[in-house]
Amino acid sequence: MTGFGEDAAYPVRWQTTVEGRSLHVMVRRQAINLLLDNDSPSFTFDPAGRLHGAFVEGRNYRRSLDNRMLAKWSEQDGTRSTRRRRWLSADEARAVVDLAYQMAARAAGLAGDAPAAIRSALEAVTGWTWPRLVADRRWFERIYTPVGILPPDQYLALVLQATHGCSHNACTFCTFYQDIPFRIKSPDEFRSHVAGVLDFFGPALAMRRSIFLADANALVVPMPRLLALLDVLADGLESEIRETGKPGAAATISEPSPLGPDALPDPTFPHLPPATCSLPPATLPLFAFIDAFHVERKSVADWQELRGRGLQRVYIGMESGHDPLLRWLNKPGNAVDVLDAVQTLKTAGVAVSVIVMSGVGGAAFADAHVRDSVALLNAMPLGWGDLIYISEFREQPGSDYVRMAAQNDVRALAPDELHAQTRMLRNEYRAPDPNQPPQFSAYNIDEFIY
Ligand code: SF4
Image (cartoon, rainbow, N blue to C red; front, top):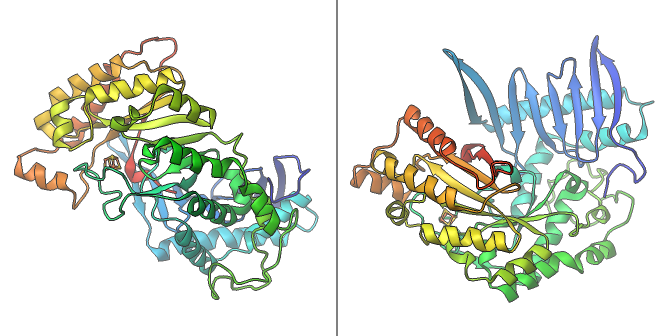
């Protein structure tokens, strides 16, 4: 699966000089990098040529597939470095995009004697412009409903929406799927979605490291229906795409674009070649969320079968080990359900990630939340390959949580109290086997981007 020739050996590097400054181009299987001087500015494009990320004047930028841009940087605050982030306006995002493609155009103009892989990569990149990325967003939005959230280690997954929304959709703090009724796709509908996704990504599939079965609770789907959906990934799809694609070559546009008439300013621009877009299900591990309450609706044998279909890790929003707080948050299930769920999955050989929310329940629940959450984590058979995420809680405007906190006089923790609680959750954890502990990581929902 490559857009740059089957026999190219990666990485391929090439260097030139622009106005006395060195410009490096590096083509890897999964990305194209342009770097000026000491790596600033630098730009990363996916193998289809869409801008993926940038580093300019000390700021990191990440562009989402729906063409929004998140800026992240650090600020010194006394002796402490504080991470900042903000979504750019369309004009600000366009300035970063234009800078990236101007630099790519200069490189392409000088690349006449560069290796073929470099020239192909720069050709893929220089076909993009801001208007084309705007049109690309519309294409993306025809294939996907909003991707509400992913675990941080899955931001580079290929998201496939087998379901829409969340089957529970009633946790008081959560606004991710408020307006999306839960629905399970039929196999035919899912097949068509997956085919659309593959066509959209084209050679950029090489950047994706896993499959994330979305949305929030896709694994609650009853086993026979879930297996029928997974069958879509396992067979049929590749041959369906190959029948319509043109192996090994970029086809020029000859049929109506899914983007609409204004989507492609240059009518000779090569369409992403669908023949390069087959899913390799045996090599891409599968990940998904599930709520703890629903894990037990499947047997250990069911989970083993899903593991055999590629399911590698399941993410459970535990939030807290304190039952009164879980009830106040209107989570499905209680602490024992979470423990049972983790034990079932681990018995089946499926890795687990549990997500704990530091600071949820504010000052009113703080002591009991830490005590019972640590006790629950310490009782779990977690080890190497498992993940404990700590997500520092932020009230979502418009959520029931905000209203209930005001009614019940639940004071939010101050930043220092929040960080102290995060440290307590981390420091009081004891792995069952200290030589093979699970990994701890931060889960900052404000940095989610797809
Ligand atoms: S189960 Fe997860 S996605 Fe669903 S409402 Fe609760 S927190 Fe949100």
